[in-house]
Image 1 (cartoon, one colour):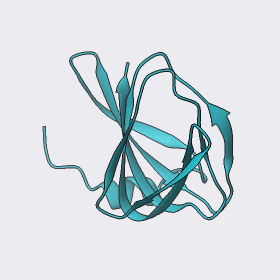
Image 2 (tube, one colour):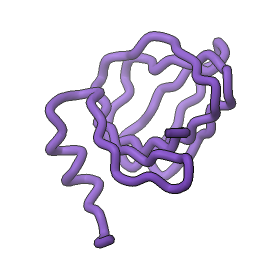
Image 3 (cartoon, helix red, strand yellow):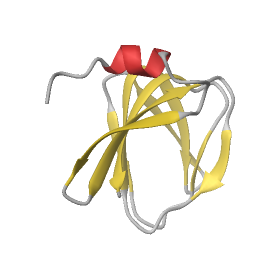
Length: 99
């Protein structure tokens, strides 16, 4: 596999909040997502997911608590934990989740 330009891939996505799978490692899927300034509704997953902000800022609400995730930072949302993206989130997000 050759190196992947995450910034270029995110810029080429068809619109905000769209994502592109990059790789599967064991039972984990790695994908890149371009955020917009809008928020997303609350959700939860049966497995944990790792969220790494490559550039910009993620305004995450986890179990009712605001968790700002800055560029270069990683946050792991525990399994079955309600979380939502709040307005003001922008930039590029790398997600690792169970496939």
